[in-house]
Length: 628
Image 1 (spheres, rainbow, N blue to C red):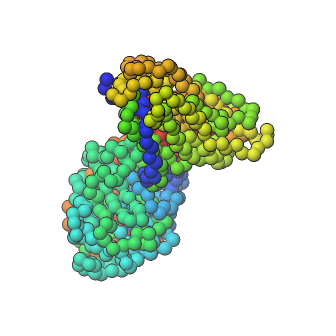
Image 2 (cartoon, one colour):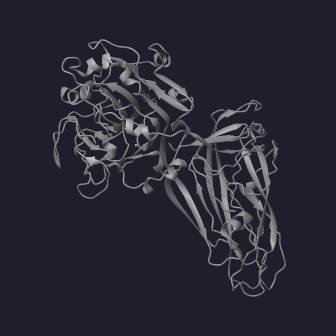
Image 3 (cartoon, rainbow, N blue to C red):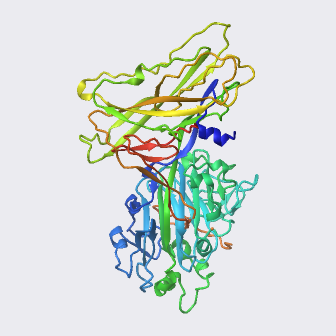
């Protein structure tokens, strides 16, 4: 029988050893998922003067959403956020500038995996300076700036650049081949004019030119956009970009693991930079400005195809007179997601002998919540009560077969109630609940003298808080049936009982196996049915009705600069030159829907929010992966 058929039959291997280790993985909190119709509510619209002295009028949110200039400069439709510029009207070249939009995240971040999924970025046309970047508006440049995607005018590749206070340098590929970008400057200090590998201009920072295909402007847009991702840890800052056909599968699935992404475009590895002392508390910024301290310099403007000594002697004179040139100067954003590393417990089991052929099982538990898969073919019949105290976990036990021992792994689940269904009375909004949950119990055979028999009770931890009848929690019991078949036994098995296993559910509480008389040969192809019970404990004074289902969305699929700026980014609080950036593509898609009419729905592999009956539970950062 093939392994897939074994899993479909629900067979489990006997586990004789269990190991629990702590690992870190990227998870996504719902408050860090900048997508959907709520997109603009998660940003502030900058409407002051451009810190980079650009020829631009940044608009308030109210103004950007209106059609004052001929059409909106910001809008949301078809699951995409549009951020554009005024391409309808001419302006005074000596005035403030062309209307545009600059948005800054309301949240600040130190560390994370920042993933921008773009369908379109501003075209690389004369006068433009688009950017996707992060910076600290508290202390610039001492708390750093990270320019993930930017360039100016008609340049055809993106630049990746860092700006810091003194004491941070990078190595590029000087010591080994570790990035795909071509490093042009190595000292990230905004005031530096020299580096370990050559001289540079003041305000230039440490900068590199992207060499990946279709990574900027019209070429980027021609292939449907793509994805830019910036990883920021205490050890390293690195940047990748992916065209629609090359986006890593784990990123598309919402479980990114950068260790398998190959060489980054840019990295600080092998350099000399204390990341945590130079980069702190960053806002995420997306904007399009014109001219300014970088693109507005004569040396760069006069290198464009639009420069005309008589008609357009300056960058601002061209931008003011040619609105139609900027119809393609817009961002079309599918999503921005900021993943954070979370420490989780990873438990695995193995066996040296087994009476059932099946894959070994493993589990991963999120630090703030956990969930369990319901095996294919199992039935769920809930029942609930509001009387108490009822804590079935506190004294549940099961008889272990003679000649066996057990090991139980526990975890903690913490969740917050954000909303309740209309039928829920006294909704405990924002209440935080912690539960101790037995993850699973493994049963292992041990050597015994002939003719002897023992039994051991499996007891879950007792956790009965001091309480009164007015504050007693309610419970919900779930029954499920698992059918498995004995496929093989090792040669050493002589007296074989029908195998049984405590179901490794994150909410499993008790199990009574079907007992059989000893047999002298392996019970091949014998089918056994077992009934498992699961008890969930809910917050006091809350009625748990059957409620709506949980849905979630994953990241969808959706990339020869010759001039190096002598003046760097500095897009923070000081009016210094700064870099610009672009984005990625793809559209969003619904990845899956879990449906149930029972008070509790157990979901595997989702990160975000979970609706349990009428209650919306958030903070699910991991899941228990079971093979049944």
